[in-house]
Image 1 (cartoon, rainbow, N blue to C red):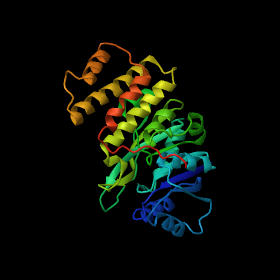
Image 2 (cartoon, helix red, strand yellow):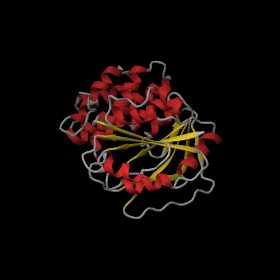
Image 3 (spheres, helix red, strand yellow):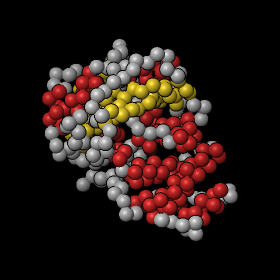
Image 4 (cartoon, rainbow, N blue to C red):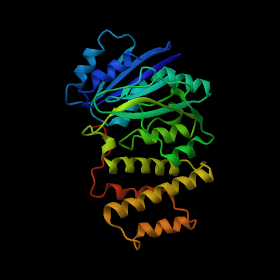
Length: 303
């Protein structure tokens, strides 16, 4: 049984020493592999990775032109040889027990995909040891992801075969975490362990999470794409997805663009509340509202 740690790197030189130290400190008896993907960093990130991992066994280093985190994630997982994948953002610190806890939870709950809780840190990093943390196994994984908006990556672990069956992360979307949760939860059993297993730096400039338009756009269009391409979703799942998309569009149009109760966005919201079904293609087009007058990045295409 092997866990492949897949770490995508883009201009994170200042954080990588802590990230790599936390990788080395992972407890557990499982075999491990480390896959680093440099996504065209322009700082010293790749030099830091090569220096701090020199002499490591089971190490895979991939240096590619900048194509975005979603493509880098898919590239890293494709190169991994482990049975299980542990994604790690290059500025997130894993608790020493993180991987072992997630792996044990996945096996004990007979799940394919498991995630914990992610926290934040300023300068000091501290983790409480888990003592019989609560574990929730979701009866309808996809509905739960749609309804509760689960995302992020450093707090999760999944079977590689599930990732492959789901088609990986959606490369039409800049950030990878929303499509990851949606796609994997539609094909496998999902569980959550209620304990902090990793932390992210607070107020780091350039973090995707700090760009509200990017986050909401990527979360919403990932859902719209999935709805468009999966006609076998249950009525409950389709209804929840449509409601989530239209509500986000209306709220954003009102908050950012000053849309009124006479606007097309509010009219669509009312029609949805009355039971009208909107085509997935139209839902995809509605996501343009998040890109209007906002810095929403799109995936880079190969030259």
